Image (cartoon, rainbow, N blue to C red; front, side, top):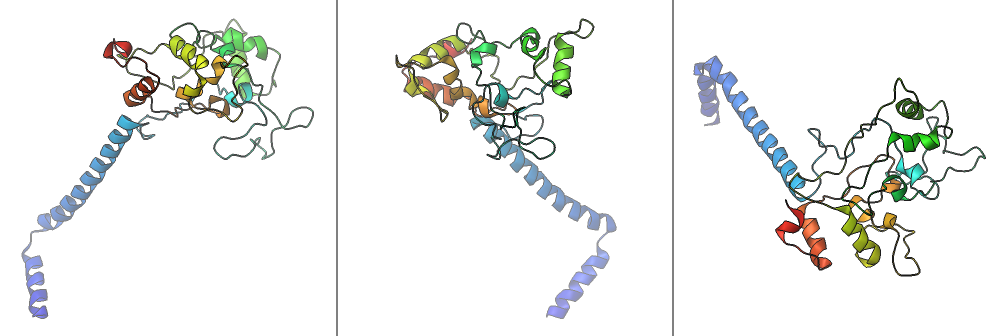
Amino acid sequence: MFRKFIAFLKEKDRNTPTWLKILIPMLAFGGLAFHAIMAFVTAFLITAWFGNPLPVFGFDQSPDQPIAFPHTIHAGVGQLINDKTGKPYKDIYGNERIDDSGEPKVGLGMDCTYCHKTVTKEAWAGIPPVELCVSCHRVIGSNESKELTKLREFGLFEETKSPIKWQRVHRMPDHVRFVHEPHIRYLTSNPNAIQNKSADFKTLDNGTVEASKVCSTCHGQIATMEKVSQKEPLKMGQCVACHRANEASVGCETCHH
């Protein structure tokens, strides 16, 4: 019986046209490829709808900037720690970063509002002009640093002076209206509503917090990021849940044009 079956297959194979022999495997492979692609697209859409999309097709949540700006150095506190590895940052030679005195480099602990000056009073947080950056880095920082050299070219020399075209990281649809000022005002007065608090989070004597302490609710711990990325989904569900938890309006006209 088995021999008859083998003989039948051989006869079938002999009578099958060559083009059909090629087409059948191609259709089978194409079907598998189609289902694989559809599964990937479905996963991408689901993650994009409920959270941050997969980092493909240009949807990287951490774009390269014209000049590397390490928030760890400017806004961070304590020894500079890599937020991905949990270990101290190292230089190109594999040594821990140290200052001129031989001590581990620490963050400057600058307040967010020093650079993002309009965050407490306007809709937009504000991006500092290059003049503010070079007001410090005209003299601070090594002349051998490639990034600081680029910064000084943007801000110091008339023949190259121009605005820095920073790449936007956190995005919302055009039909969404988000105003920073009321959110900052509410959260500074209601510290219990703040999310993603840092280890050194503390309130002031009057029970409020500084404006720089509330940013983590939507942006995550920016001070620990060498390269800023979007940590929160910033989707409608997250906003509505926060509004309900804090008894804020959830009417459509509150956030939509």
